[in-house]
Image (cartoon, rainbow, N blue to C red; front, side, top):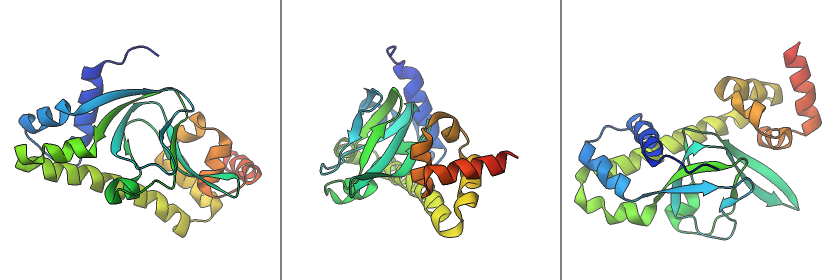
Length: 198
């Protein structure tokens, strides 16, 4: 993997946060001072089951999946591509061990924000707390959209929702993980794809 360009990564993250909240350049400089760039190889974990998640990662390049293991079978509960943030919200907020894994599906680059570092600089800017909340709220909104997919749609409608919301997932992520994410078997996904393609 080539050395990532920190200026481009931070600029992309800044624009992402700006889509949720406005803030002064001085506030961004404080945030930037506590950011770190992480390179993850395909297959690497950024959060592991049983360990406390202490950070939020903004995906600049690559893809990740969230999954848990139930009775020896991996259940994919989230798939994430560039331009969004990911974390284990429950573990991060409650400071409790994670019940899921977050794993890189490709060689990836993220900008990492540690919760402790963010809280540590809150007193330096009144704006920072609202920015921190905006980041978390944006992630909750994103998660809820996906959760609604399970309650509102049947399997074929879920696939169509995925195609509309994030078609790149189908092109870049193993069908085994996509099927698990949609809550169906791989064979069922193959049949739905065939019907949809007609």
